[in-house]
Length: 427
Image 1: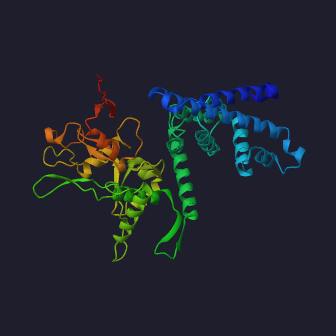
Image 2: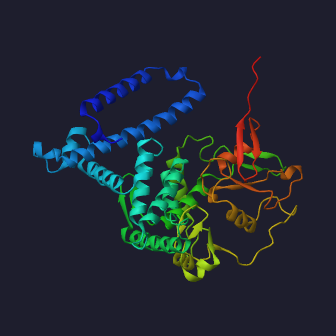
Image 3: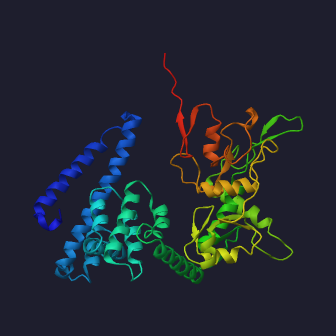
């Protein structure tokens, strides 16, 4: 149902009733909700937010159709709407661009948005991705590709992950076309990122320096990988007698540092350890997964263990750096199972696991593989071997939970790990 099928008074009355219902809900003490109701309320509010945004854009489109700004002498509908809503002309212009495309071309996205199944950030990703499809794509292929992304969004894929998946939105339509389109997009994005790269530094005059920068996604992932590892070191070790020791002086334990402060401390540590005898190949180690055929014909993409995708050409260049480990699928293999010889999984075993997993194995967790430690489902201390099959990548948070007796851990057949808090029986 569109706005033009309703009398304005009817719309206003219905919206007023909806606002009254929200006000009534807001008066309920949040502390009176049980955990289940908190979960469902948050999900319902997210759907309501999407429906309201969809309706607002539909009303905005109708205002534009009637040239509502002319009545007050506004420059255009966007300026008129910005003054009316307390927003900005730029935001309203973006809304008009989006709703026009939804009404003209993207029916599946519009319907899912209006039903509250997807949010505005996901809608923007889908529409922008579809607008970048090559001219050779037929209308039917575009509709099929759009439906693929809408389904992923409805299933819960957030905007960031959806943006990555959008580069392969033609996969189910035509794989060869999908490979070429992905490579073209990555090349275009990488070239634009190089042009837009900048950095500024300002001496604050108090012993500190402030700065800002914009860098390409690949180099940002290298920096993030290095900082994450430096800011979250393992906190457990043993003394000379073999007794476990926990170092409470590390950032986050014994010191009240927030996340940005921890990253700042890690950044200074990284700078202090830069090579002073000249700069050679890349220092940060990343795993690059790429199909052998794609490496040769330079189509498709390569996947870093941080979860982002880069062009095959970029992967070939990075393969020259000592800090880049190519995982060429379909190529030679390595000895992966060292049995009981070592407790920690080797770099070769991590590479093999990174082929199976692109993120933490915990159910629903999207922290990238590069942040993960390899957990032994069958504990090494209890006789479990150090092998690929007896390994699951877990981010620091979930690795701690795996060894926390307040939780039960279930290893699912699909390779994921499920955590459930143990219920304490009340007497």
